Length: 233
Image (cartoon, rainbow, N blue to C red; front, side, top):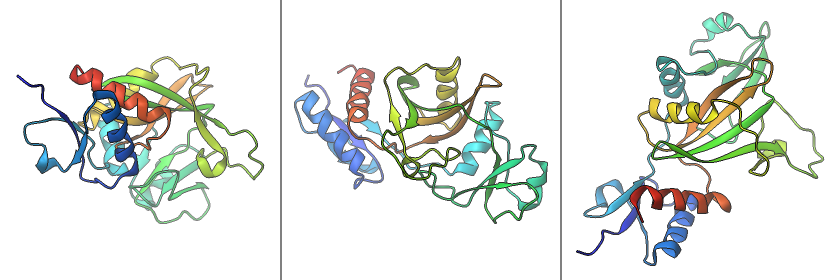
């Protein structure tokens, strides 16, 4: 019997990352791996990349599961119940790269937002990639060399001169377990999990799970290998 072929299943077939992954998988398996809609899988093996999950839903699920995650409120009038001096307002709940984040001090006029979370100081920030409920890659956000613009260390994104690095990553205790638990709490089996580590508390906190992680360079190759391992190819 001829083995079933692999397809990538997603509601967003125009994703550049999904295209790159399909090309990489095609190289590895020796046949063309197509990108298809969920209704077009047919009699094939599918690796599914679903739509993103609203951040309010994510924080709610994390707390319901008892995971280590920043405390949050969804009403402006409840901001005073957040213990931290600084508060993170998220004006966008389906975004990436720090878009829609406004950090303000309690006692000042807060912006209107659908989500507010406590600000937890972080010594390090990581992204743990999970597939089939197993962590297969961990990267750490670090300052990019040669970045000479003003840097905001509170929001560590590309615009502020931060990049993901894999060399010499010292993982805090419990990071991988927290990443897998966060993905599972959302009813998923994969995701790129953003986790911060507070040095004073020696504690990890999950911030979000990215359902459509940006895939380029080494990340594409690692996802391809993880997918093939999970289906035994």
